[in-house]
Length: 137
Length: 41
Image (cartoon, rainbow over all chains, first blue to last red; front, side, top):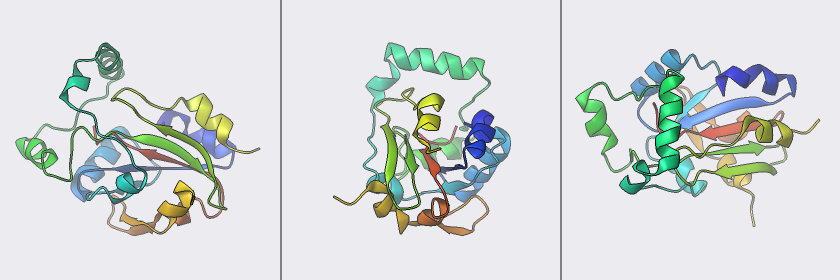
């Protein structure tokens, strides 16, 4: 997403991300990932629940499409931020579910939903081209 | 049925610097792409 921020900006759209974890984790992630757009922290999954985003399970880890997605991510230099034991323990907290799935949406100023992609499994992400196409103009 | 953006607009969350952000402010002036991360990392 960060590689395409300029394309979205050219179309007059902002980008913001929402993640789980705590402020410290979010700060580290933002710096290491080189994210310049806002990164919000939803420790209690309030927004995730409003958006009715799903939760996967351990069997999703074994799916061939997810294994392929993990390989792509690894090749791209993406790494899980779980270097410390405390992070693993923290993620097992009730509201830091490691199986929480994400989604991508495009919203307009009059609170219209222009696009919605709700992830069905770990590697299921919205395409950049679809997101760009959803932005008016 | 109320749109998702309308339901999310009133939700306030802290950013990574600790500032409270009302989600609706992000798309108040123009379209916005909201990405819910699977989880950090």
